[in-house]
View 1 (cartoon, rainbow, N blue to C red):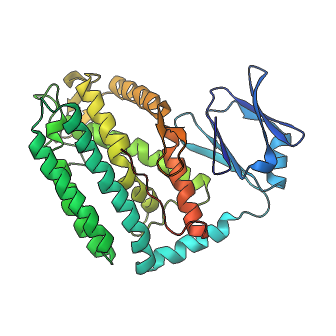
View 2: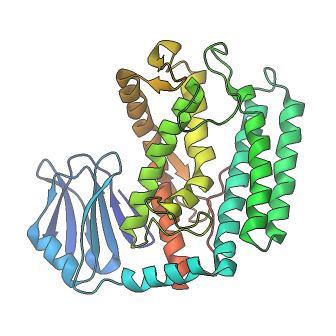
View 3: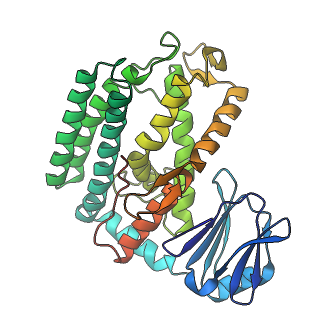
Length: 343
């Protein structure tokens, strides 16, 4: 369990939530694990829950404490809210900012600074940890290019400028992605990013994990009252969760890319886990998908020190922390959106 920005996150498997006076009580196997005063909370988010008492749900609605239910895998199920839901004002602010090129660029700039910063440190980590097996000078050159691109982002004014700088930096980042694959190079290699469909095993893994992470981000945005379909970097398109894609840009390198590299470099996947179709599409088999999903759930439970909050949280809560920070910025509590800067 963790309280972040007055939101209680309950990650204990098979937890039941009950009310005792003015406290939420977390029970497991009918034994009290923890109690938290409700007056300290703005929301409660619970994963893989067994249930919540009607008394607690009524109390949360009465006190305007958002109670959100997620599956253990991070998919949003439902929420309990009172008669007045403050997120209406929040979403109206989000829509106004999204309609403004200038305000959208301000948020998008920080998101992309986070993306390039995190991409750079994936490369720096690889160069440091595997200096005897990699062309360290090549990786350092790309890292330097991305560092310069971060500086250029800070001076950019429009969405178009931001996208141009980010596109060149992303091309450089992916130019060394294959270098960071250290095992089974005949079976796992990266030439270019292919999405629909993925044309090699690495792209199949990336697409699968990006999809999982994107779903987690969309659910986290919903929980804080934001509209995951209205973004700042990605513009409106029917059926596209543009805001979730915005935050995915920031988080994909430290969460998804590093995870995929770990799967390959520790031989948790092999060539027999994939099937190539006549069309050239490469598909992960069902058993492999389940194994990768299990490994992903374990990775999400690992702890990290959040750079802005200065608290230890699970990797799986990073999308929730960033969604909260974005909501705080839109409400005017933070002057800028603080991106997740991993190192």
